[in-house]
Image (cartoon, rainbow, N blue to C red; front, side, top):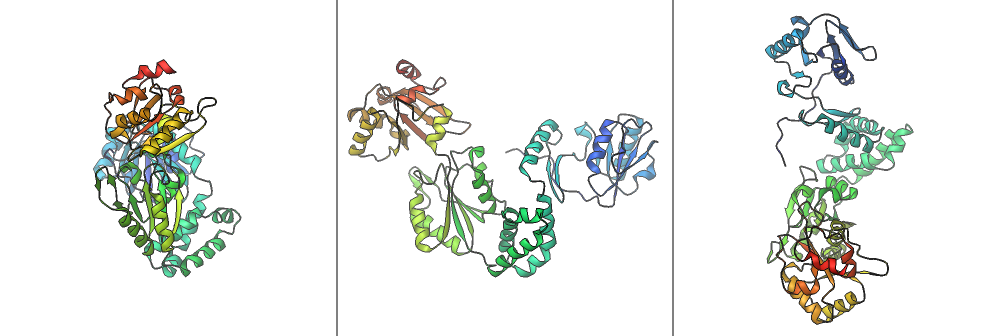
Length: 464
């Protein structure tokens, strides 16, 4: 993650003057932006070409004078001229923050693309490097925020003192505000003019249980790419007091939680367990009983080799509220990376997900029979024993020419694929990169896109 050269903030301009030097389109653009505030906007230019009549600004058709800068909060210079050069020097002499339009190197601050839902504002800035990108991001945010969300923000502000009086605990107050802005009842009530009554009802409920009850959310973090996280997972991460995560969950996903949320790594790497499963179960129960909202982040899907069943059982026994949030499992991400149909009409009628680690002979016999019958196998945790597993499958009756595809770091930017046949994999000719892997076995695997795969790619082409 890069380092910022600017510090994002909101600057108070209420009742203060903002000076804009210039009379053209660039000055008009700045006037359009600043006039959304309660500042007194003053335009100075010898020649006024743009039409400022739609905005509450004062236009002075003359060059700026020293007295015009007295007490100004901000100065924009929107023209290249002697007047503009003088205005830049005067702003710097007085220590007034200066923005020189389209000259990032001369700016003390940048004007972001703004999504306005007063009093809520969202500003998107690229430090002057890519204003077009900022506008595109702003358009996406505009689509996400309902027009009436600003009224909910005003409602929250009007209740602040009552909330502080009724709910002394800071974490409980935060949960009330989260409920206020996410409740499906509040937005329509605000639109109907009954927002205050609905908010008061919600406040009374939270005040009655101000200590708050804890809960655990078992969240599938997916294969690791941030943009494959579900919207529900993102929302709950923002509500969590504590994030308990596995070793394989990337930092970028964990950082999607609140900045003040505690982070606890209970990861298990091969050959090293920092926490036993019993300790994790105890930790989750203790945190919830302390009134914490806990996001238990698991790589992939919690219910697919995530040992969620043991944690769910512990939470049930302790009477702790819990919820499961599904994630994209590694097999699905591996299939997507390689455009491999896991099921295919007249080729593969089903999918078997299993772990190759510690597989017994009876299991291997069963898998071999399933693969021979046309089903696709997705084997997890088998990279270190890929050649051994392939050999054992062949020994138990699987055809050596069965297509095999291995995807390491599925769903991530550093995803790597390997293609072979079961017989070729037996020879152990594949040198895998580091990372979790999924081994796909079956006739349907040959229909995937393995053109960029490493190792014996030609073997797939022969059987496709």
